[in-house]
Image (cartoon, rainbow, N blue to C red; front, side):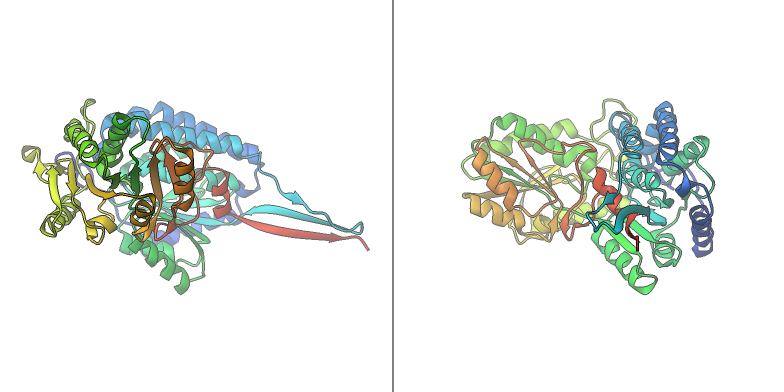
Length: 460
C-alpha cells in the first residue's frame, strides 16, 4: 500500500479471499454459538471494552501516526480528534452495557409477558478509510456490548490501524473469534462477507453505490440485515441575520476543508442569501489559505493530501466539469506540492454554481465548496432538498422561528443550528434518502445488533 503523504510504499498487507473470509466467519460463529461472549453478564463484557479503551489511549501516538501515514489525515487531527473519539466510544458503550433492560408488558393475571433484547449473531462491519478507527468503533462498541461477534473489514487504503486495534483487543483479553479483521478489496473481501450465509448483520459506511451492492448480496444469500450509512451533499444555509458572519465563515471553511473534505457530512454546498452573498463568500475565500495542504506529520498542518492519486484525479475532473459548465473558480482547483510525491490539492471554492450541475448534486468527497444563492426561505429549502442525499445540514440565523421551520423542513438525519459537526455519543448519527438508514452512536445503535424476543408465560 502507498502513503498519500509521499506516494511511497509503507506496507504490504495480505488480501483475504473467500476462503479466508469463510474461516473468519466460522470462527465468529463458533464464538457466538459456543463461546462465552454472548453469555457473559453485560458488566463483564463492559470490562473488556474498558480495558481496550485504556490500551488505545496508551497507544494513541502509534495509532495516530499510522492513520496519518495510511490515509493522509493531519497528525493534529489523528491525535487530537480521531483516537480520543475511539477511546470515548468504547468507554461510553461500556458504561451503557448494563443499563439497557427489557420490558414486562401489562398482561392478564394468568400470564406474564417478557420482551428481551437478544444479540443478533455474527456481524460484518465494513468501514471506510476517511475515519478508519472512528467508524470502526462506532460499529464495534455497540455490537460487542450486546454480545455479538464481529468480522471487521477495513478499507483497503487504511488496513494498518485496524490491525493495530485488533492486536490491542487481543491484549485486552477479548476471547478468540469475538473480533476478527479481514483485509482486501471490496469486490472480493467485502463481497464474500455480504454473501456469506453465516453473517447475520452487515453494518456498512461508504458510498451509495457499494451500499446497493450489499443489499443485492443480502437478497442473493440469507436476507441478512444490512445497515447503511452512505454519502451526503450537505447544505450549509446562511441567512442575513446570522449571529456572527465571521464565525459562520470560519465554520463554512472548516466544514469543507477539514479532513480534506473527505467526509460524508462535509459542508460541500454553501447556500447563502443574496443580500450578503458577495461579502460572505469573500470571507470564506479569505479563510481558504489557512488550509493550504501540507505534510500530515507536521503538527502545524491543517489539511493533508487526498487518499490516492485516483481519487485526486476524480475530484479534479469534477471541478473541471463544473468550470466548463459555467461555474466560476474563486480559488484553488489545482494539484500542489508536486515535489513531495503525495496527492495534494488546493482548497477549492466555486461560485455561480447552477443547482442542476453535477457538482451541486453529487458527492465529490474532496476540498471543493459549491456556492449557491437564494432570496427566500422557500427557495433555500428547495435548493437544500434538490439532491438525492439526506445526511446532514446546517442553518445560520438568529430567528428562532426560521431556525425551527427550516430544520424541521429539511430531510436530513442531523441538522445543526448556528454550528456544524457538533454532537456527542448521546445522539444518533445517520441519514435519509440515498444517505442510507439505521443509526450509529447513541443507545439507538443497539437496535442494529439486537433482536426483540417476546416470551409469553401462561399459568393455567
